[in-house]
Image (cartoon, rainbow, N blue to C red):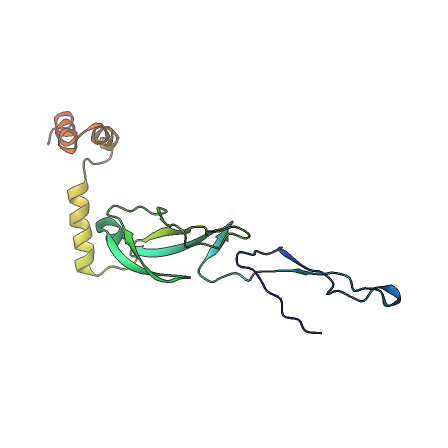
Length: 173
């Protein structure tokens, strides 16, 4: 026979639903037994579930990660504006509270955790390549050999001090 079963929000693979008296008829025409329905939840193409939290990825160009951008992201509740902050690094996360899976037998929902996948271009035209070379030249503190000392000084407190220190140690020839 066919039955309609109410599936509560928040179930996951392995959840069992107990339907009292809906099983097979007992021996000798006795009362019907119980029916247990074990659920298997299909994988979503965008979201991965971890407990009551959902995880997803968003790919952004390295320029958007460096400069920052606001963009639209499709959630289970519709489009949401998310902000990729200036200086976002690969693997950084954005948490949207309460946009995950409904808690089973409790109120509230888990979170939606968005993992940022910063994409570096693999094909550049001549102008793009020159722009990146110019940016690289501006960021370059020291050639190989002195880079470690310069980077440590930058970490301690100043790009200008690092450049001057490097130039003092390695005068131009």
